[in-house]
Amino acid sequence: MITADTIVYEKSGIDACLAVLDNGKLREFEVFNENGAAEGNVYLGRIVKKVPLAEDKFGFMVNIGDNREAFMSAQERGLLEVNMTEGQCVVVQVSKEARADKGAKLVRAVQIAGTYLVYRPFGTYIDVSTKINDEEKVRELHDAVQKNVSSQQEGWVVRTAAADADINAVIEEMSELRNIYENIRIKARSANAPALLYAKENPLFDLIRRYHATLAAVVVNDHNLEDKVKAVFSGEVSYNADPSEKYGLQDMLQEALQKTVKLPSGGEIHIEETRAFVAIDVDSAGSVARGETDNLNKEAAVEIARQILLRNLAGKIIIDFAGSGEYRFMRGIMDILDEELAGDAQGARVLGLSKAGNVEIIRRRKHPSLLEQFSAECPTCGGTGRVEP
Image (cartoon, rainbow, N blue to C red):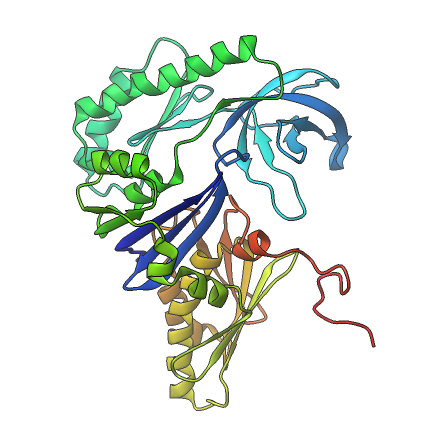
């Protein structure tokens, strides 16, 4: 289960970083540009060019004012296919942020997230978070939202945080989110593309909601933000001019960028990020006895789950554990991974065991990995890590 007791926010100019700590260990680390094309932002973009795709499909490169053109598909589930031309304007939302080798990915079906709800103006039905286990509460929330759906077409997602909220607060947020979307539409009519129409809230508040059950302290270096956090968080909120120094974040970050992670037992985990997938190898370091290998793999499974979150590894993740890859030996290991990744905001799923005996995980990609954020491909070796003699 993913837990955290401290969140650290540090801002420097237009850049900011967020560190999530649990018992002094770095759990998550995020760096973002407050003026950048963040996931969830809504823009009035301008079509730059039409690009052909496989199977006679096509998409568009869109200028949203970022330093790189973003991609939008002409086909989008629940919406009619569009056939636009160069120079046309379109309201879009960032669904995936730019990576080292790719621009941002855009969608037309805008969604506005609040504390308790997600408003889907292009949706048609109501979903309730599967993490709310109280069936009576699920029905109560669904019925309350259903009764307050407007006569126009709209969809809603009831978030996990709504389980502990007053129903009136949930209903009030419906109006607030509708107003946000209406303001987006009004701005779009008069804005000159490219233009930012809506910026998602500071991700600090999403982290506070996500870890509210175990969160004890929030540390910031911005007095204005300090007051806003105190308004929504009842735990300890403090100001520190240099929180990175206090918590040793730079040292922990440097450690998180290394390819090799040493385990207390003496084993090692090797992590390689490739264009196609993330490869993780568990090295027994000489521990070959059955019992020792089992314990090593259990220890590695816990650490691998932590590294996936910390490094923001996403897409296909393939793990080669030590020893035999037979299902009877790997079942318990996969259970540990499932438990450690439960509640991941990016929906990490343990798919099972491949025929080659490797454990496979899939995880949604929303943000660049730590390695992509803090490094660039070497122009000499082309990213291979090797130089010709």
